[in-house]
Length: 108
Length: 120
Image (cartoon, rainbow over all chains, first blue to last red; front, side, top):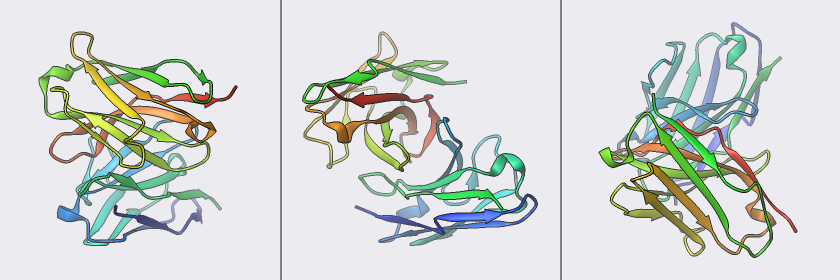
C-alpha cells in the first residue's frame, strides 16, 4: 500500500498570498497518477488536479500541480477567500487507492 | 451533468449490516468506462477508499475492509449499493459514493455524502 504524507498539516496565510502544499508518497506513484481535491466543511471533496498536473474542468488557473515519482506539489498562486479549505492528495497508480491526511489552509 | 445521491439508514446497530444505495442521474452506469465507488470519512478525519464496481459487476475492494464489504450494481435502476457487515462504532463515518474514471481511477463526481452512525 502506498502511504501518502502531506505537509504542512496546517497552512495559515492571507488572501492574495501563495500557497504551496506538499504530498510525499512512500513509494513511486506510477505514471504520475496523483490527484488533488479540495474539501470545504459539510461538502464532498472536489477534484482539482489529476495526472499530477492537469486541471479538472472548471478549475481556475491559479491552481497548479507538479511533481513525479514520490514528491508532488499543489500550488495556489494567489489565495482567494473561497480557497480556504482542506486539500487532499490521492494516488491511483496502485491498489488500494489511498489518500493523504490533508492540509488545512486557513486564514491568517 | 452527472449527479450521485446516497440513501440509506443514518443509524445502524453494532454487529448489524450497513446498507447504502447510490442513485446516478445524468449518465448511465451501463455505458461503461467508469468505476462506481464508495469512500468514507470518519468524523474530522481523512478519506478512505472502500471499493468500487464496474457496470459488468467486477469489484475491487480495499483489503482492509474486504472481508466485510459487498458492492453490487443494478443497471436497470442506475444504482449501485454498499453493504458493510458486522459494523462497530469504528464504522461511524460519512459515506460518499463517487465516480472514478475506468483507466485512471481518480474521482470526478461525488455524492453529497451521508452520515452513518453505529450505535445501540
